[in-house]
Image (cartoon, rainbow over the protein chains, first blue to last red):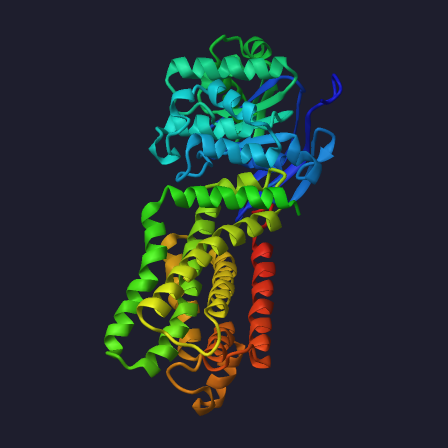
Length: 242
Length: 245
């Protein structure tokens, strides 16, 4: 675990180009350890690109990304982080149990741990179902289980709650906070503003730039509204005027 | 490189195949069916069946494993599982080894059944032993696996991946000396066939057909096929980039 106070992730002047388009224009931010940081903003704003840069699969133009004290993408980090892509990246022609078992083997996790995470994401009754037969929400939870199984220090989750019913969403957010209470650092992207309220800290990313980096409370104070959707709108408008 | 992760990957690939019984049935049943067709077509002409049937036994696994692995790896690339795997402790060589083991085992199963059918049902006769034929078939299958893994990097869709098959297989098959003896080919065609690995696989099978004991030509052919196999695996591993644009 990173030392108290030391950021789990430090991004400095990150520039990323995908194709001809520059997606991130010199972005800098930090993720505090042991907290759930929400990454919010409209789609196409660079959320996924930032996440890919942090997990070390994005080719970057310039800038530096340091994860748990190591340069992003280091071999040593691969035991320490879990990444869930936006589309569920699991094997459709394998069962939930087989998918999670495979990622457990890669991470060196036990069989008991496999059963534990399947139950954490609420898929006990679907453990022997083929992944292709799962609903969208079930598949994304199976994908989450594959990342949780190695008990990583840093979890990078790209829109993990899309398509879930409110009850399941509630369960997952409770799980995220249990994990952060246990010292894990989470970066969770979403474009649903009501999820922002559940984060310890928020990063608002729009057109490749950070519009806000604050706690939900600070944001409410700065913008004079409790409604986070409104708060974001005011920030964006203020920026456009400036 | 971690053998445990390679084996875990092989196990996972086989479990995926186990859920796809129709594919397994096709892998196992298509070669005997084609042999039946060939045998019926030749209408008892044993000499021709002994030469073409024998070569078919080495060509089936090459084609089928090329197709299966190029699509399996393409799915891995397009579904996001490859990107995810590259953030885990698995090394790309473990991943390739896993594919090699899983599909090599499938190829061995396919070869044993096809060879058994050819020898027992259709009275294929070779001077060398059937064990050599199985061995060459499995080596060809691994060549197909390696080429398939490499080719998957150049296909964006399954439609494209499937069409790499005729592109990669047919020129090799046509110029391997089956349809026209190699020494009667135009110089450039002959040079082309010298560069194709399938030419050596076919020659190896012909050696087993004609000689009771392994000849030096057979060893040379096997060495060439194995060498190309290694080169293809290295090329395939270079296409598995951790960081992508």
